[in-house]
Length: 421
Image (cartoon, rainbow, N blue to C red; front, side, top):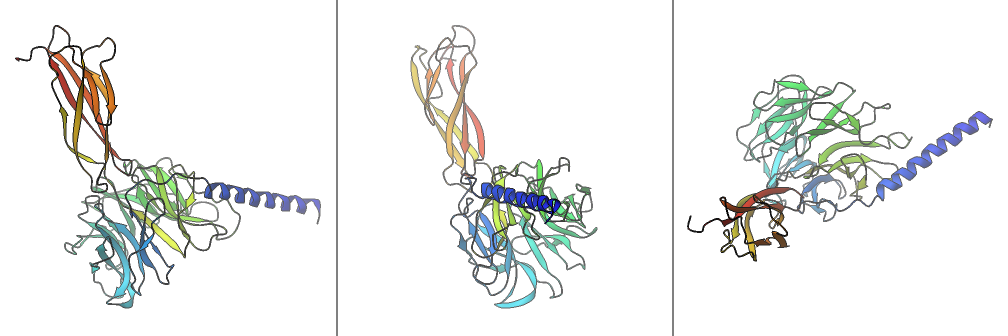
C-alpha cells in the first residue's frame, strides 16, 4: 500500500469514527421526556408480523397495539380531541385486499369503521384530521391520478380538493384554511376552499414531500432528497418557503443506512418526530429531535416502526376567572389575602395547572404592594391614593396543560376611593 492509499484509508477511518461518535452522542443525548397527553403519538409497526397501528406516550413509553387485522394497517392519525384514530388499511371483512381504504376507530381500537369504498384498482391513504376534527383529508387515486380528497369522519360529504398535477401527503395548517401537499415533486400550499389556488414553496429536488406544519403555523418540516446521493432527509423551512435547512444530514458513509422522513411536530413546537434508518439499527425506527436537529433520540426498537403522527393539541380554554374578594375595604394599609378561581377546559388534560404569574397596579406603591403566596393566592395591600378613582390591582393568570401549551387571562381587584360609589 503506497502513501496516498494509506492517507485515503486513514481519512475514511476517521470519517467513520466521527460518524460513530456523533451517533453515540445523538442516541445518548439524554433528551428530556417529551410533554403531552398519554397515547398521543400513533404509528405503525410490523413487530407482531404484519403492520398494525400502535400508540405511545410522547417520550416513547407505554407502547400499545390497537389493531390485529391480518391486513396492512398503516399511516394513523389521532383526532384533535383524542377520541378517534384514522388510518389506511387493505383489510376487507378480515380478508387482505390489493388496495387501501380509509378507516376510523375509537382511540382504544374498538368500533373500526370503513369510510371509503373504491374499486380495487384504486387506493386511498395518508388520512389527516383537520384541526377542528370535522374533516379527514387523504390522498386517493380514484380520479386516475393521486389527488387530495376530504371526507367527514362519519363517511359523508366526500369531495375532491385538488385536480391540478399529482397531489399527495396533505397536511392541514393550524387554522384549517390551507393544506400543504406534495404536488408532482415539490411542496405547495393550497387554499382548502379552492384547491387550484396554490403557492409553490420548494424548487430543489428530485423529491420534496411529507410536509408538516409547526403548531404556530410559521414553519414547515418536510422530507427532501436534494442532497448528494439523494438520500431522504428532514428539512425545515419558513411557511413562505424561505430558510430551507437540512436537519438530519447524513453522518455515515455507508449506502442505504441513513434516511430520515415523515416529520411530525410536538404540540409545543419544540420537537420533531421522524422515521429514520441508521447504521447498526435493524430497519426504520421512530426518532425525536429538537426543532433545530439536535438531540436525536430513538424511541422504538422492536420490529420496523414508521410514520409517527402526533395528536394536535390546543392550549387550555379559560372560561371563567374570579377573585375573592374583588374589592378591598377599608383601605387600612393591611395586607389582605385574595384567592383566584379559574374555570378551564382542555380536551387533552383533565387538570391543567393554573397560577398567578404577575401583579400590577395603576397607582405607584412605596414598598411592597403584593406578595404571591400560592399558585392562585396573593396578599394585596389595602391602600389607595387620597385622590383619583381608586387603585386597581391586575393579576395575570397562566394555565398550562401537559403539552406545555398555555393560555393567559387577567383579573382585577380594586381598592375604591369611596365604597359608596
